Length: 522
Image (cartoon, rainbow, N blue to C red; front, side, top):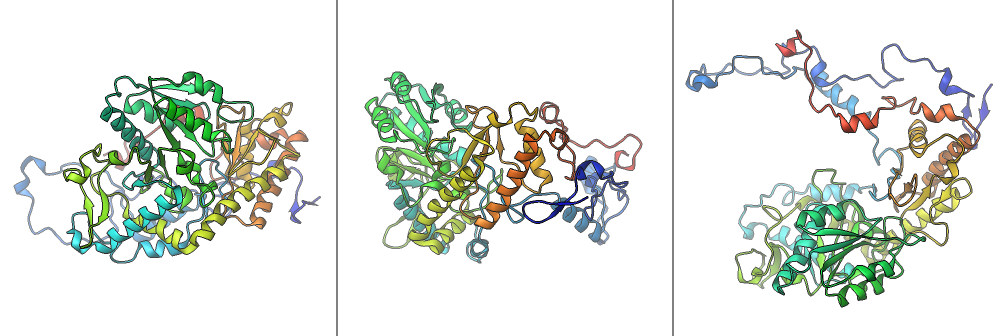
């Protein structure tokens, strides 16, 4: 007997339990794909290579005597292998990606087209600067607009990620204290309990000891606790605003005033600038350094260990210590100021070998120019509107961690509403996979028990938000109705069933080992 759910699609009671496992490992038209090393093509190659003109005798003892240990595939086999793997990936091009504090937003194809233009995509960092004037001008324009949007006088473009930007900001702060002869005295960095994990890690990496600052019941920095810990031994504070609970720090001006009175610097984690771009300038709040995740706010591809970018804007006090290089227009054209030149004599050094990620600069500036000032302001407004829409729609079934007042870019729920169901946050997230949605951020921030952090970004339409909300409501109703089996065994329909994540983290298998006696092991 079939019923109709609220979106008009037929459902079958106990449909999950009634579906038999497939005999091949495939699911529908999705193929079960083994590792490329587990293929049977060890004795073949997909290409014909010309016979070597020499016999390699000049290599002496370096001549290979054993099989090379690489699988051989024909062109169709290689193509199918990687296409099948791609079908197992979830992506922003498939559906909403609700990861809070990660901002998986749509990357406009216009940006990609611009980044592939000859002159941007095929230049080399060692070319004479006279031959890359257009690229340097683009970097100068990007720097101008980043400074304009943040109200800060200087920016370092070269950091390649958010954490790299944090490193840049704290090294500039350290250089400033060294210039004043106070570095040996100021050895502490204050970090709120809800901070991104990279904040205390970066501070420790630079050589500071980390002191935790408490949080109030409404999810914000405890100003009294902060004031009690500020003193002549503090080098900086690191505060995320809007913070990781999805809330704007109401006391941000007081936090800034207290910090500067103590002789410390205010580092702002700009990961959530997407929620206030075009609306608030961090420089007006007393911020001394802030990194900007270009992938979060200006729609470049998410770094993920690859080609990311995390420019850092700096206050007047820290600007002299910005890392080289930076772009200047000397009247005869654009040039890069390097450390050895007089203009960069106070720079703390370099963060990377060259100038950073050119492709990310092109994409970010394309995004800015295509939106304009009014469009960037709307980005923040729509991101906040979407998050509050989700919070309002789900608050009757789920429990908001901080129910009073609006949130900013992300809606945060705790697991209070799951009490008595024998279902955990992890169980709920795994069941979301069966419904076709990537889970939200789970168990973070740690200050909220069983946290479920949802960030829709500004790029999702109301129709897509409603589709996501409908699935969340149906799952919440099933959880409260006692349908425990739906959650404890989930996901049932993913290419892989639930993994032992604790064991995977503690005993990862990072290298494939060929079975003894196989051709691959020979």
